[in-house]
Length: 230
Image (cartoon, rainbow, N blue to C red):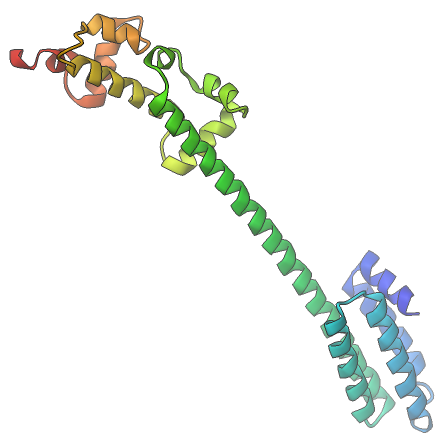
């Protein structure tokens, strides 16, 4: 009987379980007053088998079974015994469902946190790589190259970087190129022309390089190369 009830609960849900339990409790409570000890015994056995079949932790099993025993023993009529029994059993199932949902949510949150940590770690590794990669490699660097380098998809890498630094990966690469270009243009010992710097950081068109440089720094490349002229 208990196994049948639990199967209904697991396969069809709480509402179907309640309906079947109502039928069983009606049978137990008939006939009435002169069989009260039998009703108490039947409900106690049913409660024990139900809780056992639900495979609850030992502490939960003991707690719920104690509630059933005490409630059934104190009730004065068969109807009251059955009613209290039903309420405790449904309370037990609801509590079990809530705990299961909470555990699932906790596991999901933990998995999400772990994935976020991995994503942020990847983004930091990419940033470090951009800062330290040779200039001749930087000139051909793009999102596809980095995705292959770190063995992830381009979309995943771009998303991780944006989530961590609130900046697109494309913008980060561009910024590093411009920073290298500024450093080379302002180097007084190792002189470079604007044309040479443009090529070194990956621009075939010096016109395009000048445009991007001015947009990025708010000044002309020539101003950095020859500040004395301005």
